[in-house]
Length: 225
Image (cartoon, rainbow, N blue to C red):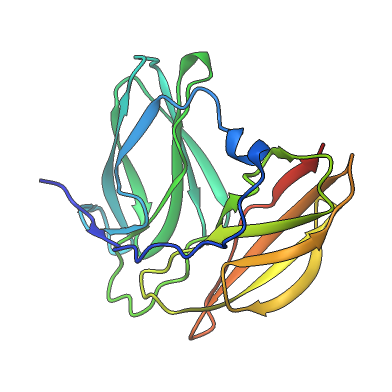
């Protein structure tokens, strides 16, 4: 049976503060495609060698709505390059660079989509891994929080196959290219940031490990009211 070397999650430690109800009610619509392989936050070791630098991996997913044809959206996290691969079936072989982190998701007809997963394609003698880009936990990107909110508490998640994350830099502001707010945060949350009703805010997390490897998250956003 195909399997990646799954990364074992230790569980998140959440703030005792309750998240805004508006945030809890915000969900992505039309998530009906379930990714199967390569597995989330894993090192994929099941590729067939194509060359010294590339291997072919068969991507697999399940679709509740039979919304073929599908588009696999595959991003090389190292250089941010994205390719689109069309498939008429719920699996397709794709040639990948060895020793490289990727993110991927699948879309189909009628605006159906999957979640976004990340994984590492096995390399030749890799000794350390770059952290996976952080994902927003609260507020979820695109959410609207209560217009009466005067501060916001940010929470995120980041994983590293080496399990050696040492800190985060938080970028935050009203610009789509937010400026550094605080560096070297030791926990995956930051509380009490002032916000104003009627405004939209943008934020990004840079994750750093013990040997200096870094990854930048996508730029997340939320509105107040």
